[in-house]
Length: 116
Image 1 (cartoon, helix red, strand yellow):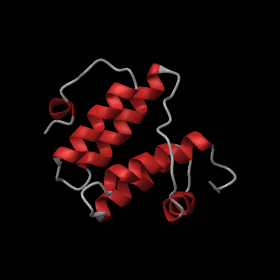
Image 2 (cartoon, one colour):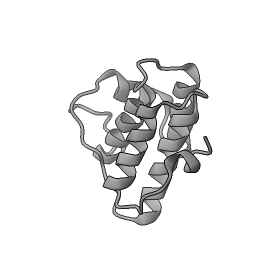
Image 3 (cartoon, helix red, strand yellow):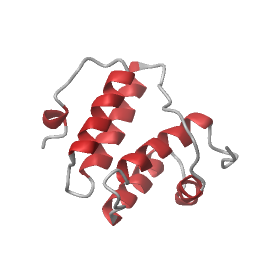
Image 4 (cartoon, helix red, strand yellow):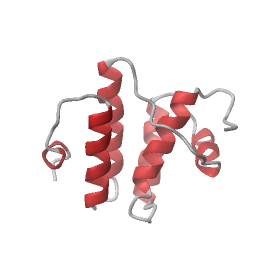
């Protein structure tokens, strides 16, 4: 995959994962896009880099951070994407539950965790 030179493979995979959550309901709501930009800004990544990543999606894997703190930070990002458009779908909740499992985080009630 060709990626912006200043982004790591892990960052690209994380943003593609977040993007996949945003479009899982087949609609990229403006608030979801803004949330993606906000997450990027919080991580020191500019808007154009996010656009570049989204414009060249390809097969990607889910990057699993090594530290537990970073795993929870990533899960928080996923939760932000899920609630961004104000509509939480079963598909989005299932995606979050799958990520939680892959991150080897104890099972949680994702509905309660997302406060929905």
